[in-house]
Image (cartoon, rainbow, N blue to C red; front, side, top):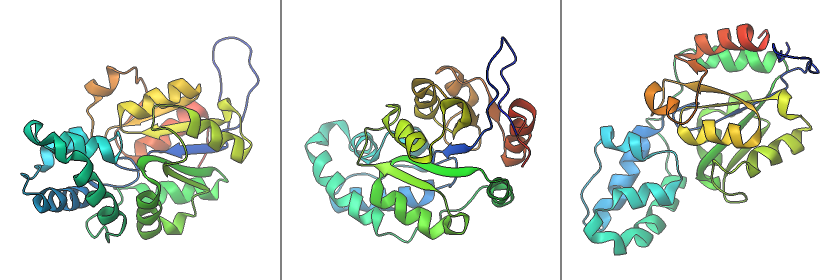
Length: 233
């Protein structure tokens, strides 16, 4: 259960905490986001966003999502749509949101191995808390952070706060996410990162932002933890 630096002499540290992105990493939230977003757009007589276009809009917070969804000739409505969308999504039941294949087993194995599990999302804090309570409550995540107290990813402030809260060092922490903001956040915080390919970005897109370690599913993620980080879970 160690993070091993292969080149040079370093202190060997245990991986003690894993910080997960939420949308596209822990939960497939796209169908519910699309439903609430399109309902919000319809309230202002704006056209809906198709699911294939939505994927590329996600990852940078609710305001940026709304800004990308509102047509260029109606940008004066962005703030009003945003103010409608945020409470609507925060209070929504997330009926279509689900875990990914193999995730339940992976999270339980990590919890049983004593690893601290954390969520860091660019969603607003209330929305993050609500969907985690609805879909991830059984895993008792140690820290759940959405946007509000700290700047959006890829700013590393929230990661540094999590490490301080848990009392872990950089070499004891791993970031896991499906987006460019996630690999950049890990880089900015000076921690290792695993980029996942079951979310909302392609491998080519992520490689363009410096990602170099990839998992195609949760089984592969556990294999990476064992082979690259010597973590038995």
